Length: 76
Image (cartoon, rainbow, N blue to C red; front, side, top):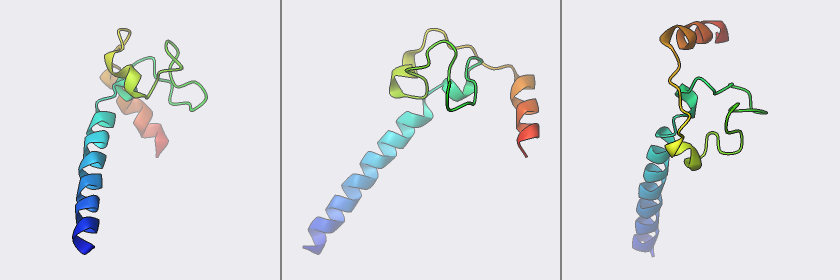
């Protein structure tokens, strides 16, 4: 019984790690069109923003370094 539980926990942990890795590949948070607003996450693709469907987004524009660093400064 304990062995079955242990195997179940190990399997769930592996699946969680795979899903977490997939979530970290979503580019929205580094995109210029990402608004940081939960009501409208993306101005170009609001329905697929921050989801697995956004992995192949053709409209992805990398934020400029000055925008990301200055924005973080005001969050504190």
